[in-house]
Amino acid sequence: MVARPQAGTPTGSSTVSPHLTALEGAPQTLVSVEGVSFWYGKRQALNQLDLAIPDRRVTALIGPSGCGKSTLLRMLNRMYDLVPGSRTAGSILFGGEDILATRQLLELRQKIGMVFQKPSPFPMSIRDNVAFAPRLLGWGKKRINEAVERSLRDAALWDEVKDRLNASGTSLSGGQQQRLAIARAIAVGPEVILMDEPCSALDPMATLKIEDLMRRLIERYTIVIVTHNMQQAARVADQTAFMLMDPEQGYGELVEFGNTTDIFQKPKDPRTEAYITGRFG
View (cartoon, rainbow, N blue to C red):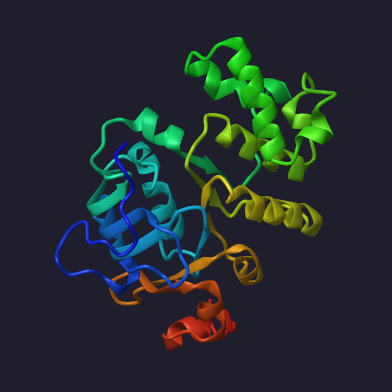
């Protein structure tokens, strides 16, 4: 892929959305969502989203159920391809290429991995869970073994499982299974990790471990997380995007995007303030 665009640099039309300008203190933009809309068949789910996702930061997507947060997340690595009749408009630029137009889906999903809401270990050993994608890519044994250890260390799981790598991944606790899923996602060296409510099925202690892990992972990765937990967004996210469904049109829109501290302490839109203070949602 070509050099990453700088934050705030127009990559499409001459009119640049305020959501695409560089946030104060943010690094360069890694993923640029520009004028993006989405349809499930005839039903429009998203309308004209503009969002600049900075490199090596945590960006949280918040908003009520049904506003399109998970749909946007799945657009970032083209998982919507699995939904018959879905279609898009606009562009999502990553490394100078349009995610919505690329045909190199295997390469894209190597660079943008996904961690789902429910821990989902494969019915195989801990080692084989992490080695699954590297083996599909034809990596050699030494490289795979190095990737397994590196990924488990990065996922803060190595010390807990290093003496039982041949045990089933399903034998781990819920929190450990989610960290195993993270290790599996980073085994092939992505640039971006997408997380769709990764802590919603976990207890508070396991949740705190995942949150602490996210703050350490951004030394090497960019994270985009969907969460309904306002406290979690406030704790882990550097930037937060608030989305809301238009009550008349029925599609999701981006209401406000900014530094997380600003979103929670001095939101610009009254709808954002109403949501984060619990007056609706």
